[in-house]
Amino acid sequence: MRGKYIIIPLMARGLLIALVVIVVLVGGVAAWAISINNQLVVLDQNVNEKWAQVQNVYQRRADLIPNLVETVKGFAAQERTVLEEVTRARASASSIQLTPQALNDPKALERFQAAQNQLSGALSRLLVTVERYPELKSNQNFLALQTQLEGTENRITVERRRFNEAVREYDTRLRLFPGSLIAGFTGFQPKAFFEAAPDAATVPKVKF
Image 1: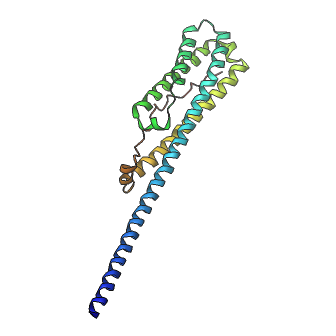
Image 2 (image 1 turned 180 degrees about the horizontal axis):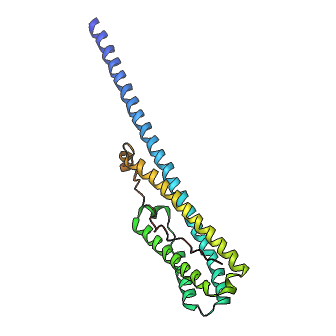
Image 3 (image 1 turned 30 degrees about the vertical axis):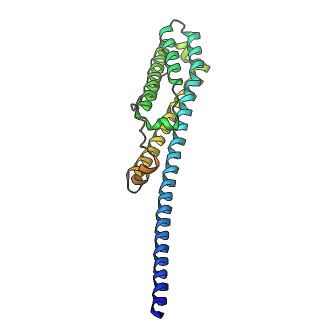
């Protein structure tokens, strides 16, 4: 009988140790998974922040265009076709605003890029026509708008690059183990790069 009292506490102690080990392992795995998930959340938010900046600089460009069109119209009203093209392209580009969720849809990003590229092309054609109007080329309002537009185009290039860098970091973490494992359970998805043509947003340099 005495031996039984010794065996039972030993069994209970063994079960307790096993239970503690299981709890520690489960807790460790949970902490590990939470840590990876939090890293993905931070990277995802960074992508969203960079995208917001991309949209901000594109919006700044769109805000400059009405004044640019009106200034050109004052000196070259006969260039109605080009002016109307810029106005339509601006309306089309401004109508597409991508939410952070839409960044997971490559097609949605392609539509945004296409609209912005169309506007860039229309602006390029507008500024080329300026060559035919010396008075417009020397107008102070036009020169100020052109300077602001060129600065905005440069900023667009910078912000697109920063966005792509954030996407690359996020997608890499998402595809590497254990990020790929956690992403499968938490719903994180790869994001598309902004792949506009290298010269799509470059304003032609107008020589005076």
